[in-house]
Image 1 (tube, one colour):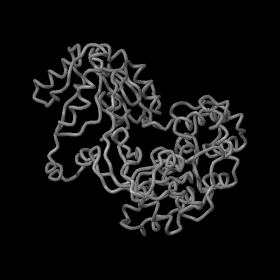
Image 2 (tube, one colour; image 1 turned 60 degrees about the vertical axis):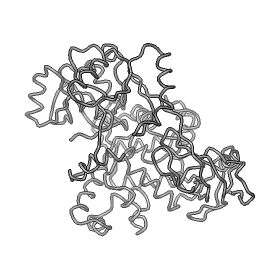
Image 3 (tube, one colour; image 1 turned 30 degrees about the vertical axis):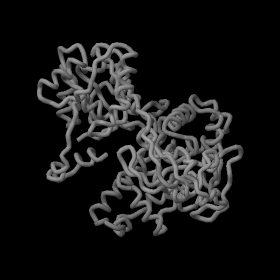
Image 4 (cartoon, one colour; image 1 turned 30 degrees about the horizontal axis):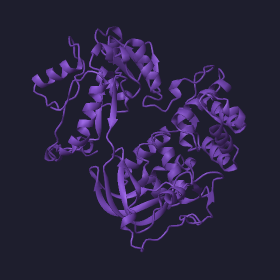
Length: 491
């Protein structure tokens, strides 16, 4: 994170002052080389730094020996490490194995066991999430572990606290699971002196004071009040986030201010905000208010799966939203002369009338998820939310008339984008590149037009490249294409 933020600095003197270093680990577009190892040797000869601890091995036993060796030796390095990447050496085999939408099939990562330390459990505080779940969080004496200082760690639920027999005042063992997420492993029983106190789950929501309810047969306590400020904040941030309608600039600072000023109670309120209202927010001048207003208005049209995911339905993530959008497009095909607004209204009505049994039959959706979706759309509060969104002019970027939903309805990094592939690529055949585009939520077209978002150009690109340059369509090489598939933004 520090390195990424440093590279994004607009002031090069700041970037230079942080003295970043780099290890080169791959040569893109290497020709005439048969192995990854040969490419690393070439990188070294060209003067780029390559980690001296990289090793070429034969077979899984050698891999295991290498992992065990560095599980302890890594602590002697002067930089942090969290694992080892294991790669297929043959470039021909790499090409045969190909890529998933976000990673190569010919490489995998082994994560080291987490480093553990001890600290004091000073207090437990309950936080309320966007679904109303009450989550106890441990406040601990600040301690350095896994390359960062940890002050808080989730305790998940009251059953987990009881299972681990955690008490306020305990000396506890703490680790960063996967070297990322702080986790309280358990108490150090021998360190107890009798001053520790047992903790009880509050009976009321700590934010809105509504009586909390425990899920039948479950471990989670929830606030049932849909207007709870904490739920509203979390839900609206989810709606505006990258998995939802993706409004750049509508993050915590903006959304929280709007809620505090009672200008934002539900998603539809976003689309009613004026430039003048946004200009009144802290740190917002006229130009920035105009830009945010324009981005909000542009978010009236998003792929259906993004809108569904942005609603924050329990048990519904990105893939389930894709599955649901595809089912809706099959169930309610768009008419020849039907507008996107009219089609969206029909799709919403179909969802509101769908039973749990119907939804459970949708490919990719099980019984628990199907019943959760049905209950969500059978709720009066939900119906008001959807009606207000439709009244505000929000509509799905509907599939073409008569067409079923495709992966272009997805919430991938290329959702809503049209790409054309031309020429010869090093790591993809043409069908593989087009499948990667579809897997990332994009549309793979066969010809360049003014509606094309990107042209992916390999070697020996011909007339399509000339046409793209004439129409000023952005042209990507293979490296930039891979970055786009991984969610990186183009320059």
